Amino acid sequence: MAGSFSPEEVKILQRASLKNLPPGAAPPPPGALLGNVFAAQIPHSLLIRITVNHEDPEAAALVANRYIDQFMQRKQEELSGSNEEAVVLLKKTEVRLKQEYEVTTQRLQQYMQSHKLVSLDDSTNIVDARYRAVDAELGSAQMRVRDLKTQLSQIETFQREGKNLLEISAIASHGSVPVLKGRLDELLREQSNLADRYLEQHPRMKAVANQIAVIQEQLTQALDLAIADLKTNLEKANATVKSLEKVNDNNMEESLRLRALAVEFSTLQQQAISAKKSYVEVLNRLNETTTTKNIEKIPLRPLDRAYPDGRPYQPNLASIIKTCIGLGLLVFVGVAVGLSFIDDRVKSAWDVEHFIGVNLLGIIPDLSAVKDDDKYTLVLNNKQAPDVESFLSVYSSVKIHSKLDFPKSLLVTSTIPGEGKTLISCNLAGSFARHGKKTLLIDCDLRRPMLHRHFKQQNNLGMIPWYENGANLEGDLSRDPYLGIIKVDENLSLMCSGGRSKSPTEILESHAFGQLIERFKRQYDLVVVDSPPLGAVTDSLLIAERTDEVIYVCRFNRAYRKHIRLYIKALRSGKNEILGIVLNGLSPRRIEYYSNYRYYRSYKKYYGAQT
Image (cartoon, rainbow, N blue to C red; front, side, top):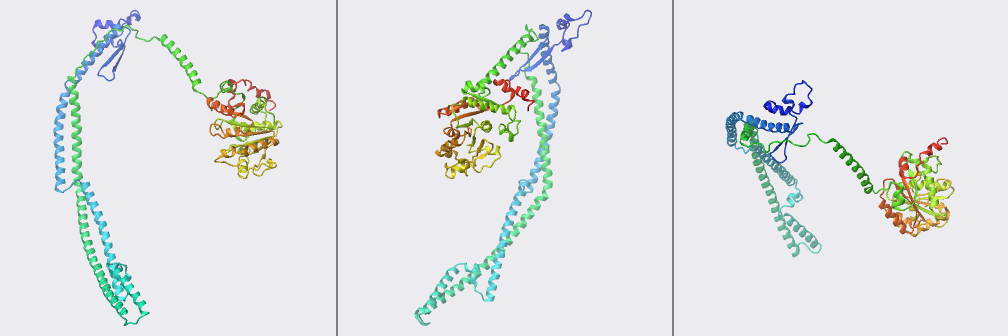
């Protein structure tokens, strides 16, 4: 392209660069003034679009038009001359390879016809299959000959030793022998019975004797016929063996013959395959070359000539920056607002008090750093730590919001498993016990009990054994052998579930369970009931009918607000006193951000010296 421009066209290309050229400096050559040239195919068409970016719009149109002209000229030069010679050479090679392919194929067909082959592999498989079938028949025939010889040898032995031939199964089951033998046995029994009553000359005795003689003669003839049949069958079996052996020998010879032909057949077949492959490759190449040659006949022309563009050749950076900033702010605000509407899970005190409409009793921090053996007895162990203070804060809120005096019963539940209701139950019961209230902690999660593990106790006594053994309510229940109430601290006792139940609603819905809770209220100041989650089973609703107050546990970013509000409504419809919600599992930073507990971190600074 650089050498195709005329002096006047070169001046047009240099016009824009002369503005910034230092005095006395030579203008750049045409090759450095072509600008940026882009060629792209328009999808689903046979069109090519040429785009040129240049400082001078007239120079850009000049370069684009010259690019098309040079491209068309180059194609015409490439497609003329050399293709014609290649086509002639490929045609000659194609004719020669076709003849070789036909000769090798004909030679292979003649070889197969002369030796009566369908194909070597198929013929070999047919002969081998026929050989295996005949060999199997020969084995059966030989086995038949051995069996017949064994039977005849046994018959000769019995005849020589004077034994009864009817003891041989082949004789006893042959033809009419079984019928004659049965008839003979009947006549002999009849003769024996008549002998007890008559003498030998009695007419009936003579008649029976004559019948016995006739049957014995017929039986002797049947035995001879059976022996003759066995000998005849032996002769036939021997003839069959000889015939099959002859056929098997012929099959073996044919198999050996085919294997002897394998080398020559494979050579001829490989020659035919190789000749065909070479012929097909040259034929495909000839078709490709012929197609390329015919491209010359396809019209190649400019659809539209290039023209100078009045738009700037570079983008407007200021406008782009403003647009990006505006889109970024819009996306940022839109994502934040959209997520707040989409994500319906509980994350803050505002969600609890304003959306759900219940009191927030307290916030429990994330205790993942505390050992499992310690977190359920934090209050009982009387440790000075922010974690303990959060449970004591819940204890204070419960006392403030409760409208009932002691004794009373308190249910702790949640929406789904894993929200920490057992953790709250243990430490809340420990808080009341630590403040002098005689407290009983009951594990009413009869499907998946956990309290016995956290207090390292056995789970063989409790609610289930007590109910199965008559649900006795007499006497001191703290010493009932089936309830198995365990004293874990000075003012805290524990009653386990006593195992797992497949139908816990039968126990929880019974009148005995309600009476048991009332009896416990006579012996204890507070009964804390740890129950299953409401979202998993309906056991908690049955327990709520027997208890006085309810504490609901929510884990941060776990349960949905609409579900919690639905279950709170169900509890209120049962006329239960909802003390409030305990928000569990917040990190210290989230506690400061989502709630009014902004002085959480100051605990360690204030009490650090003492701890």
